[in-house]
Image 1 (cartoon, rainbow, N blue to C red):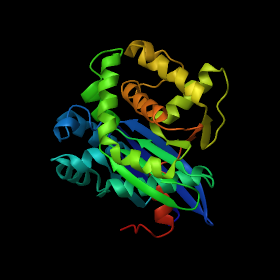
Image 2: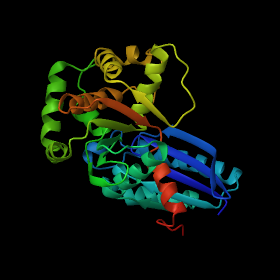
Image 3: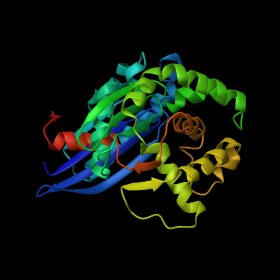
Length: 311
């Protein structure tokens, strides 16, 4: 097994990671993400729309060509929230298989949380004190309370950014009354998280991938600093607060002009930062760390340790 391709079919973004294994060393030979928006126009009704299915198929055909070009035989593809919950999810996966020969594994929310945790641990040292890892997907959000040695609790909630966008982002810029409704919703939906936060009292927030990557990019650009080629970053609470206030008060066009903003994130980032802000307001965090590693790196780790068997 000298080369492995990992495909993560997320609700918003499809990721391709190709790694060459040489004497136990992992060398990334290709890494790419494409905004497929699988959940757009259907996730809140429990299905994948025809246009989203077409985008998914086109992206998977492109990934297959790239994998062939790189001469990779070992492929592991996984699908998450949108595909998990859509009535036509299995149908869409079957169509992708017929077109590409790539078999897709549906992974549960709990498995998603477990592999995200493994990915984050590859990127940074969590430390001895409890931390809250948070991964905001388009369909689901995973929370893991852990330290470097053990996981105390983990859970996946079907409150991802596409779902929150459909439900609460009714005006542009988002209105205070919309944020209030969103906060009320989160208070109910995340009651279990609140109980666990009170028990374990993590003071460190670790955001993985997605929205958090974009917040780091914006932070570096706004400070006029060159972003290092690293797998983990720090984002202080004041900097987050500044970016949060900038994002919620701007229209889509104005958000697009924020240095560091990207097209694939410009819509969902509004409800995503509201979710982060809700957690910060309701807990005593002292810092935010960001891991650029998430699900796909965790899956790679599980494959290399034979926790996941390649067919």
